[in-house]
Length: 279
Picture 1: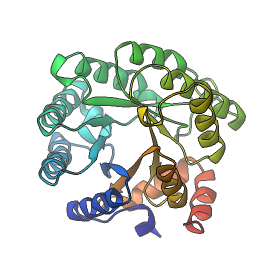
Picture 2: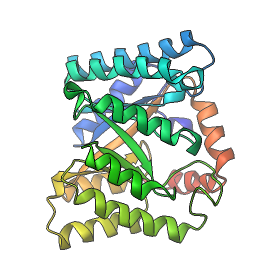
Picture 3: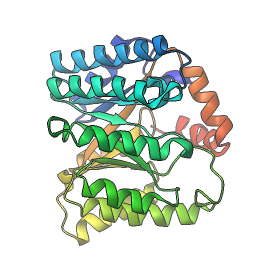
Picture 4: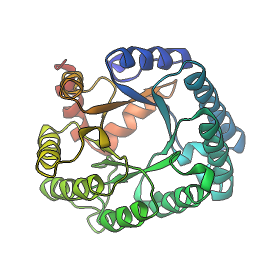
């Protein structure tokens, strides 16, 4: 089952997956699995994998970038350490003419993640080379998007996958969906290149309808999806003229990655089961 959703264990595995996606007209963002390291040495080792990915993206001329989690870069050991490590990755991405997306984790990390990304993006050389993820189920996300887009920061919008209390996140799916649509409208009219990350056909349809009605250029943003999920929809969107980027995880941490996602949100079990039956 894991091979459907995880590209493999090694760097070469994920690079082959990215190259295969590119033959289908699909870009990729590469993610070395792992979270919450315990020592600075582990954090620097995790970063080294990303430096190797950035070198390979440049040398192979792949239409790819990378996504990193701050807890994997040492955030729990200190914001200064994580900031130093991610700054080095962004410097490398600038040289390699690609992009680093800083993933969003649980709500306890939201403000620190935003602060770090805004700080990195304020360096003139880094503009356009570092972005962030915003989760539509958080109550604060509308204001966060206003702040980030005012800074010119590119955003990946997703619904959110962590278990959060009602005072922090919308508890009902209908409210999350409504907020996702509203935030999508804000992103698509911001003049920046953002990622709309969803497998929900209702959200995809709502996005396409807004693009048509507002006469937005279909290539001015991208749909983003997970590796192995709704491959049929990915191909259909490419055929319709939209940009599509697939989030491709790899590495030995695939088992805790799955178990943590399933434990946090039991609905993910049904999500995975349904997508095992789809192309």
